[in-house]
Length: 148
Image (cartoon, rainbow, N blue to C red; front, side, top):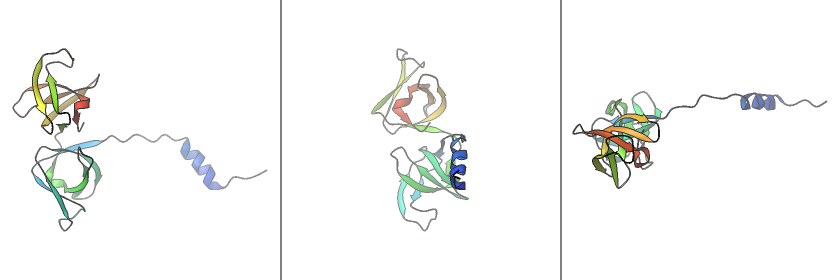
């Protein structure tokens, strides 16, 4: 009779567990600021990010957050520059924002690439309800935007 080493028993036990999925957290840059390569103002300055830009939170430390932008770049930002409100950014050349979450619905407006829109809610069927800075609201296809 052979005996399995304890590590195999542990691995077998862990294989049977299902860990909860972690939700992706998005935040919005509250005011234009510098992004760094390290969590310190002494780090190298990578670029300036504009107000209203959505970012994905990757790691959160005490006063710094490592974020990913719509292009996939990673950088550090001071936590004080992030707002809880959500925006999304248009990734298509032009995104059609419609009155209803339907392909045949009338057009409210079109948003060009890199325009930030306020995220209102995600809907079934691949639609996102959005609000433009001028107050117009409508629905955009999820595949045309990033940050939700």
